[in-house]
Length: 190
Image (cartoon, rainbow, N blue to C red; front, side, top):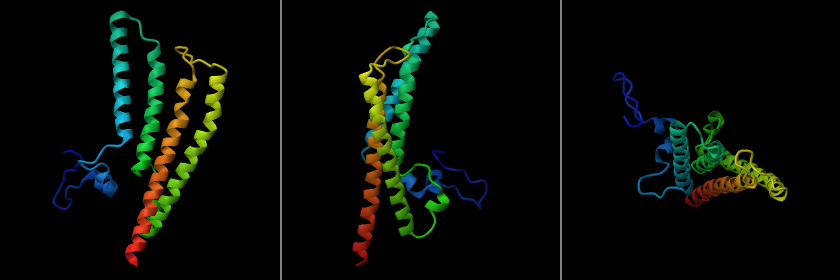
């Protein structure tokens, strides 16, 4: 089946689900094109989560004792996974949107809405990054430690401004891409 809907009768032909939901979604990463940094990071984080969880289950099964650090590290990795997934969704324009507005109107109107959306996403994550820096600095300055294993808390929180900058950068990349398409269309119209 591989992402296809089977026809119940001859009136309804099979359709590609990804292409039906969002036409450009079927071509997010065409064969032969390099994967994004976020794709590889997602694979690494998922592998680490699986290994940590599996190791904890084995140790708990055979010794009736669990690793104390696995919950804290797993929680951190899930947060990283959410932020990396957010960056991937932004660059592929696969984030949540209200389709009534996003798909309404002319192609120029849709492109302008996408540009405004990309700028607002960039602004939001720049704000999150800037506001999280004092938190990281306070944790470093006052030597806060994590509750589970006692490592410096800033080891975990430093990644929020880093990944916020990544998401903001990806949003600006989408904005520039939409702007270039506007410029290309203007040039071809002349």
